[in-house]
Image (cartoon, rainbow, N blue to C red; front, side):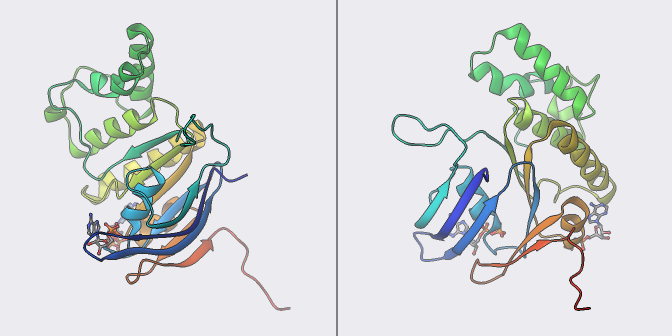
Length: 229
Ligand code: ADP
Ligand code: ADP
């Protein structure tokens, strides 16, 4: 069973902009999916709806394997990474990563241990007490990824996470993200406008068109080339 089923989803904003038009997609457990398309094609709008940040105008987004609360809302088990790391500037790297655990009333010692472990997994061992202003852009992004993964979500949604970083930093983060995905076995959805990045990272590339927010292709990049003979 897929983790998320997107059926005939469209989104029209109040100002009339039709950002997403009739999208049908299954997000399978354990996949690493790139959502590729030019700026403004509706990638972010679609990703945000999967996260429950904004609702479709028409169509449905179901989580068939997830528990639902009394009112029928799915308990979306996800982490979200924005292009801007959005860290709390007054809090250490450790405190930033601990935040989701603290909000869920995980006991302090356990929360700290899990956050320390998560920081090590993203390559920031030794930076626990550093503040965001003391960290580079790439390191801040690593903290942001650690924070998104610390609750061990089933799916990690990333909205052009590395777009603002320089090439070398981007390359390192791409490699480390792949390793993290192998190790932690979450489903990954990675929004990008970079063909290079989508091919580098994923075996499945969903291509959206500039206008009108449609899925134009759903490519299995790993599949053998079909032959006639
Ligand atoms: P992408 O992530 O592919 O760059 P977006 O999903 O951000 O694209 O935007 C798709 C389209 O919807 C764009 O034309 C954008 O200007 C428009 N849009 C995004 N958010 C809003 C909003 N809150 N209100 C009105 N239009 C919006
Ligand atoms: P865009 O679609 O945003 O223009 P490109 O994929 O064309 O981005 O990449 C722009 C530059 O960044 C190229 O020189 C490319 O080699 C480099 N680049 C993009 N992604 C990566 C990556 N993951 N690792 C290293 N270099 C990258």
